[in-house]
Length: 201
Image (tube, rainbow, N blue to C red; front, side):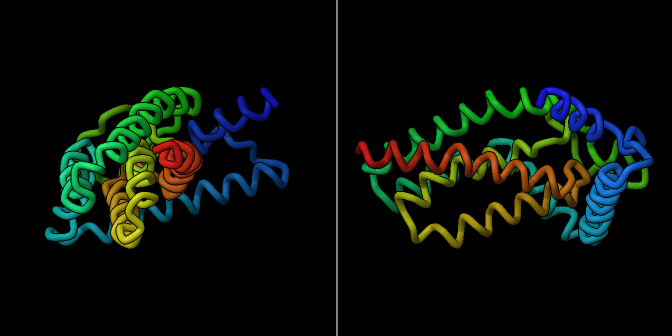
């Protein structure tokens, strides 16, 4: 198991490190190539000035600015009784912020614009590594208790997560697999914890 994990970590560092023989190596290479090709596609979608501005703006919101906005929305929608939802969202964010840097240091995956110089980075990065997407992971974790306590927010939450995922790829900071992993980790941790905690209130 440890060998498999170490091999996966090495493979994600640089596509050139993949073995060129063997079926598994070929499939991994194809997956990484498809991942990078998708980044090029998303990056091209942000070439128009207005779309580029949108991608940068959404990404910057994920740096932290979106969370006071969500807090305000929760209190407007649920009143002061929404305090437990806010506490749960903050606890999820704190837990995920402890977890994702550990995972990033473990895999050490280079960001797309470092792997392919043709990809423009549209803004500064908060850290060096790509996998998983901390923006997607944290936003998903924060939204989990909000959606559980306020189901009417479900569609808005999905739109927010998809927008954040798009922006992180369009800015060439992440691969699709990074944001999918971030969303999955955010859901996998925050959803059961939030479900259990909300049942106690």
